[in-house]
Length: 438
Image (cartoon, rainbow, N blue to C red; front, top):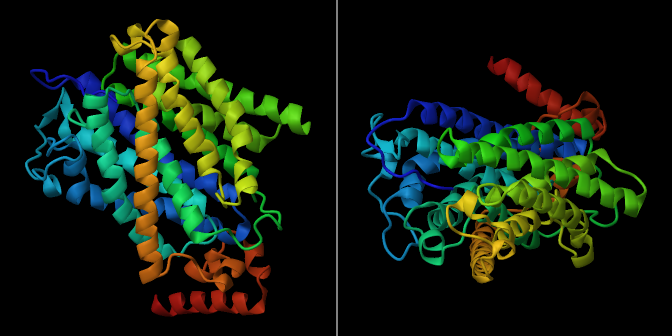
């Protein structure tokens, strides 16, 4: 992501474009809620959706209080974290500018990235996390993990961008590698779902999954195109690269499925598209259309195999945050070192365009550092929460379903009947209490 150079005043065209992109990226979190909600079983649909929706509220509050200033305030030293000049958004007015767009708009655009990154982690621990613990985790994780990494990569003084010189246009490290490594840490900490490897845990609603994937694809144009910070040719190139990689990711996954399993599935189509979109996120502003085609295809093919790693290695990454977001994020970030073109970057070129191996090494360092930091700190946060208030839901709640146990609701009428008389009575009693209160 490039911060536009300072200009004398406001550019209304760029501002209008970024306003639209901010709305598109915010929409991606409800889209993710549908995508994830369709992938779980009927007994935990609402809980899965709620984990995304509550992330919108929690991360927004954290961002306004301290997240923005720590991520994008002037560097406090060594490129590691921003200063505290804008605590509570102090000193930022409607006339304040970042580049040639309002600072308030820039802060809102960056907020939407923080929101969806936190929400993505929930897919790794679906069906088995306490809702209250998730709320606490989201707040602490945003401050201790997302904010520092965002400063390293996106802020002008961040060490990965300014000192290391690694490229990440829209968040391959900040969003994808970050959430993937964090999801793996929580999946290992909480342990597998009851019945993992023994029971079929198929998506309960593939139409919901496809609807969520389609809305994510739509929002991704704002995610990547908006990261150009202006209505310009770079935004157009990023948008086109996003489309190309999403398509080749989808086709790559389906080709593997057809050859390996004999069937091209709807879940595979949705997952492949997301894999391609994830991979192009860091590279959409650095590669040409041919590079985007190859990166998307590579992500679709590799991720279609990577999602099975959880069964081989025994970690229960419920909705494939590691297999899709982490793996595709690594692919897209590292392949910048091969496919970057001077026409897109303004100077940096990848190995296949005569740039040597130097940029490839920088991309690898960025991936490794972000992954290790996110994993270690996330595991620490999760460990403290587990030891103090408990992170994993009780076995009884997990078996009953978190929708009934936590929210006293079900997504479908037949879901109530499927949990027996006691559960049904609980819901009826809850409804009666609401009616009495009214």
